[in-house]
Image (cartoon, rainbow, N blue to C red; front, side, top):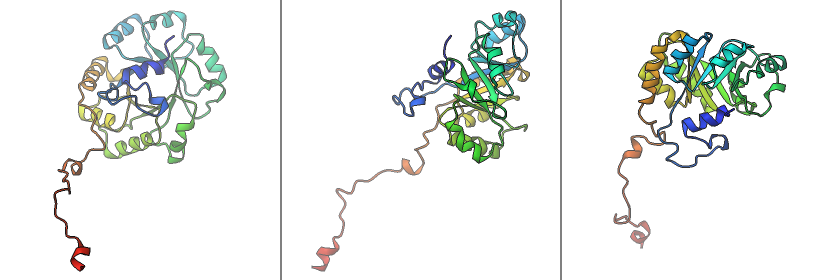
Length: 250
């Protein structure tokens, strides 16, 4: 079974992410975003439709899947969404060999979080307090996931809130959306450091396919170290006459 984080590293071209440094500037250029679809529906028809989108992974909102449904998922990387991760739930779902579990903080146990081939996605509310945000980086997890607020369009307040979460973590940061996002919204989310998008199937498969195409066509990320002030001409002082006060005094 392919390690899901290694797959994400290949997609985003940042295999050195966990080490905290970049291999080269070229590898950090034109990063791709991860596209995941969350679904409750696992039928031959729905799976064939999802294959046309070709998402990087699926999140299944169902536990202890029967073998017939697991077999339908064989061509996908996929994981199970759990409200909380416990030893019992981990053991019950582990037999189906998912690539990852996604779970919330409340009531989740430490014991099932050992290092291994199964990815660990932690879902946090978008109004998480700063106390929790500051401690996310030290938790034994691979991906931080949060959802967009229930608003018609992304507001500046939401963008600042998400950017604040991103500023405290170096782990993968995914955004879950139940609405279709505009090209500008997708671009601004990527600019603040969103690595992947999780789209609920309720958005519509055609709409998800359209957003995937938009994401792939987004321009390069802006260089955060470049401002208008940096673009000004830099002058050398080698050939500039400078009065020497000491000589004047003499």
